[in-house]
Length: 441
Ligand SMILES: [Zn+2]
Image (cartoon, rainbow, N blue to C red):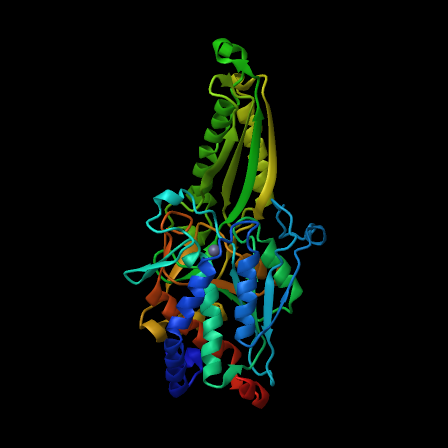
């Protein structure tokens, strides 16, 4: 079955696996270099430059694609940004074959990482990669700098054999996967529509093939209360307490959306796919003053089949209802949407790219690839929802992404890199590197 699915002869398969194995140290070194860039929101520039150099080092033409918020604003996949885009243009890179015989492929990844959280709780500093017992620790190791390194290394392995894809191979290193997706949207619109998109996002504690993901809305609720000295507390409206009351009303949303009748079938056996997270709170001025203003930042999951805009209206309705509580009388409440306005998406396991990745993973590991319906979101949705392109995610085993001591399993990174190389070979086909290109090596 493997042979039929992969369409690569056994000798070549072995050669590809050996070439990838010979690059293991190089792959891990690239991963470590990427992790050393603390590429949180607004600080992605140096990591983007590192990726541009890595793409060029793998023989790709690489260039920057600006994220023009004005031009993208009317696109249905656009999310309201949190900050401006100056100076942090995503990188796209393209290989064009001499003779196009195969199918084109986009291998995309994001350089942005979420903040490290309480740095003092990390066993080793979050942006100093550290290897312990076969795992590399550091913010972004799994989510998803390992996937970026693996994509580049997979292509490098083919070129070691004097081979290159016999179809267009696109790669992209984007920003804001963790808050809007606008970087991926800009990159997608800047390139020709590929025949498939594969994003090496990590699996949940094991290598996995994504079969679906939820949508997400980011909402910000600002409560302005009535200030008072605590000795006349009854005269004031405590904005922090008011914000907490509003937040509590969202438990009902979670219960409703996780009820069987609202579930998309792909999430039927999932524990709790739709989550509401209160991620940030700010407010108050002084321990002895009733706080005037408080703002909470929420992340609200959206079940596939429900639109994010419909959920945004539901959020406004729930906030208004909670604000009508007599305990909040005299307070004003404002709801804003900045950050994710993203619909959920299904990635059918039967689609051609998913079947090929499954066969490649089986070839490398001897194991069946597990399916994962993700309660979080990725950039893969853009290709499916707005371009009609097959897309999915498949990546290495991760631990504590978005948490403390994030790590990735290095054997799993090696396996995923090998599976990506086989996937490129099986999807795009291979041709000999041109005379000129091989002389310049
Ligand atoms: Zn990610």
